[in-house]
Structure formats: structure tokens, C-alpha cells
Length: 443
Image (cartoon, rainbow, N blue to C red; front, side, top):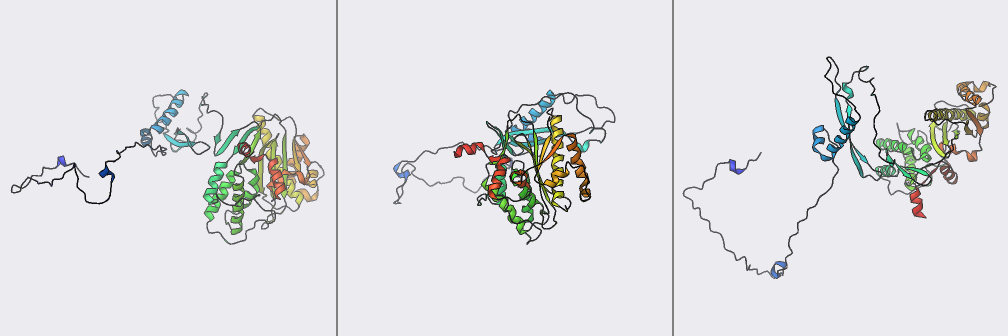
């Protein structure tokens, strides 16, 4: 610590020393210089010194404690908004502390809210109960009474990394910003795009040389899983690379890079939702029998439409081996039927019950036959539960399992690699397309 000189004793000159100091004299009005260089000072053209007041706006970082947040104007106003809302909703009342009562402490949570373009939207502060001070069966079972007022934030435009754009057809969901961040993390922002996310020939197995950075592989594979929320066209390819996250090999890394190259070429693509009064529920189910070279398990895939809108989709390897293609296909049908049952119940809870039967399309004739044939065959006993599950729903009229030609089996995109032309056609059928804004700019 340095202290100012006034607190120190005054230094006195020695008694035998002279206090007079002789300074050299200079003629400041006419400085003498023998240097041949011509300067602005010589010719009298000196520019006046200009002072600038520069201000750089920065985002207040997330505070680590309440006192730090209280001293920051941005977080202070965020906390004030939260406190005002709690008071307005009558969240608590002040009472004398009961004897022997457990006191649940509170804590502040702080977070930045961002717009779709990455700019800061607002500072958000939450006052919540500290769970570590709650007692099971005493504090955690209590439920607030009464109604709470809600803040209208306007039309939805950005939520959990998903951008929502309203257009004449309905809503367009996009994760372009998130996909760009994934490509940047992989160092593939300027990679060469490809037309499809997976080829039509090879199937991934457990063979190959180990990769050098398995952590990055797992991070990118997990990031691509989240991207499938608005990009069902990459579901099968992502499901394949995720099967080997525990021990990734060079072929798996090559497959992952191909997905990223496809994403790079379709950055502006997203999922279009349409404004429609159609309330029919239609599902397509498919299975790739014994497609895994290592385990010979089958891959099931389905997609469910509510009217023209893609509502649910899945690409998943079956847990058990199937001894025939009919068995694999029927397991896939049972999975699709279970999903449609859940969706029907959800729509009923939302006071929008369906009046017509759900149509489930399958391109395997044997699977369609088993769904309605009451005769039990010896070869179907090992899938008896799935058969009874689907058959009971067919008997009640809630479900109808119909045959569809493979040419129009949209669920193929979730079970195998497809040729470019067929892949593009099925991708369009899933309502995955380029952003309407991007399309308008290209015309």
C-alpha cells in the first residue's frame, strides 16, 4: 500500500546546502534549430489536439452473488421486475414465524435472454426457493393457490434456439443460427456441401481405426441430435452415428462429417407448419430388416401427420432381433400406433378430439394382414403382445392399418439412405424446405 506524501514528515534541505537552483534559459518564442527538416511546428500549421469521448456498450456478465447483482443497474432492474411480479401475484404473505417451523430459504437465479440473431434481448432474474432447505413431505408437496397473472411477450419468435417466422402459409421453424454454431465448432463452416446426409451403399459397423478426439465426436453427435427438432431429414443419419458414441471409429467420423456437409448446404432449411382445419391423423411406418451389420437388428422409423403438418417422427434401432421382415415391420407398426394413441389422448386433453380413425400406412403386406387377421399363427407367437395391441385398436375402429406402395412410403427416409431424387421428394413431403424469406430473395 502506498500512502500520499502529506502523511510523511517534510523533508528539509541540509543547513550547509544552498536552496537556490539555477535553471538554463531558453528562448521559447524563437526556438533555435539547425536541423534541415521542415516540420509543422516551424511553418506554424500545428493541428489542435482533439479529445474524443468513446463509450463501448458491454453486456453485464451473470453475477455470482446478490450484492454484485444489486450494484449493477441492468440486473437491479431485472430483480425489481421479478419482485414486483411476485408482489402483484400475492405469492406470499408476512406472518409471525411459527415455532418449530422449517424455514425455506430463497435464492436468485440470473440469465441472459437472446434474440434469434444472437443479440441480447433482456436480463432475466428469478427468485426461487432453495431446494436444499426443503423437507420432503412438508415443503415440497405444497401447491400455490389462486391464479397468477402472466406477462404477454407478444408473438413467439425465438424459443430454445428455434427461430419462429410467421408467413402466409403458417409458421416456419428454423435452427439456422444453432446449425452455424455447430459447423463452426467442427471447423467446417467453409466445407464443401453434399446433396444427402448419408449414402445408399454402406452401413456403419463397429470396425475401423479409433479416432483421435472422441470427446469432440460425442459433442457434435449430441448437437446434431438437437438439430433434428426442426430437421427430420437428418434423423436417420444422426441416429446411425449416435449408435457408436461409446467407441467412435474413423468410418463413424466420416459419416458424421458427411451430415455436417449436408447441413452446410441446407443451412436455410427448416420445418414449415401450415394453418389448416384438417384434423386427420395419418402415420407412415417402415423398418429396415436386419440392417445393422454388427448385431443384425432392424431399424424402425415412422412419421405422423396432423393434416398437412408433420407432428412426430422417429428413427430408432429395435431392441430385439427379428426373425423375418414381417416381424420387423410389425414391430415398427406397433411403435407408430403407440405414438398415435398418445397423440390422440393429447388432442383430447386439449379439447380437440379426433372424430375419425387414425390411418397407419405400411408397405409390408404381411404386417398389414396380421393387424386384422384373427387367426393366430405359430410363427407370430414371439410378437404376440404387439399383435394384440394393434389388433384391439383396429377392432375398436380407432386405428386402420393400410398398405402403401414403397414409392410413396415417406418413412423410408427414417430407415435407410435414399437416392438423391427420392430423398429430395420425401424431404419435401415432410415439409422440410428452405426459408420463405430465403426463397423470396432468390427469385
